[in-house]
Length: 309
Ligand code: NAD
Ligand code: UDP
Image (cartoon, rainbow, N blue to C red; front, top):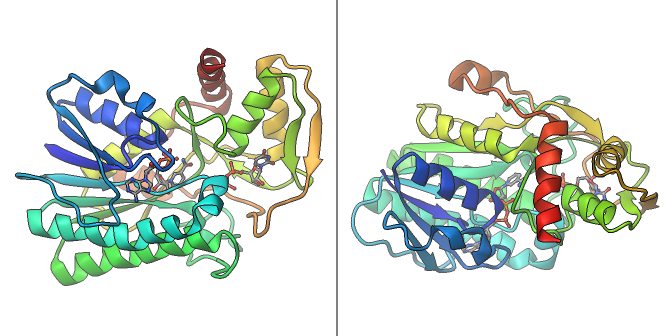
């Protein structure tokens, strides 16, 4: 297949480029590098099945020739990034998704939207199944990301129903691994960087909020299974291994054999108190199951960060 990946120079997008090239597909990576990094894809230049286009997908997207699949991953994704780029985040979720769907319509391509567990907001149902509509504050600081993704889901379903586009929606839960930026502000890069440099790990609030962390290779496997399925309704992909943020910080201190302390800082506005995917649907319809546990995934990620530092 000839596949366009928007946001392909980002953390997840670059792993998708690698994976799809290995599967023998042709990959066009499109990115405006607002939070992405050319280093993530530098090793792919020179391969004839790979090309890179620097472009902001909130503007008209031009791709020559046929296109079989569009994977729409462009969007700032870490809370620090989307708070720094609130308007760009709203635009890429709304206008960027509209442009990417318009391209899918004109080329007759299949389309997969990278959505998020943030669609569930600060959830009142736990764990979160796809049927849950969520608890999102539209005017809070995180609203720029959450509502943009909810709009993106609504637009995708409208193009599916009205124009008959063959679409997929994946709701990604906290994913981590090599190629996360060490300054992207997310808990795992922050904690690893702090632990490796002997600084205190900054736990927000009392650290009792939970997250369930998925290693990037498991996510990519889930994306590929969803791409090749006929499941056209939103599907959670994430690892249900849930822990508190304080437990995550302690685990990273243990893995890095660091002597760092823990420093408690104030909790950001609307920070979800719990998060854990119900993955019954992915298990049943995709035969997908995560295989890398948190200890192993974190060890691999620490190795990457050590090389970077
Ligand atoms: P990332 O910031 O590393 O990657 C996003 C990429 O999109 C970057 O390369 C950025 O430059 C690019 N981009 C942003 N706006 C663009 C625009 N207007 N035009 C072209 N490119 C643009 O983040 P990530 O963690 O790799 O996330 C990738 C996708 O997965 C995002 O859509 C995100 O919402 C979604 N997601 C990620 C997670 C996670 O845990 N990592 C969880 C839920 C959803
Ligand atoms: N967090 C933290 N210390 C940090 C960064 C994040 O305690 O240095 C917390 C954050 O408040 C949230 C959790 O870790 O409760 C996960 O944050 P992250 O930014 O990784 O992703 P989120 O799930 O909030 O999108």
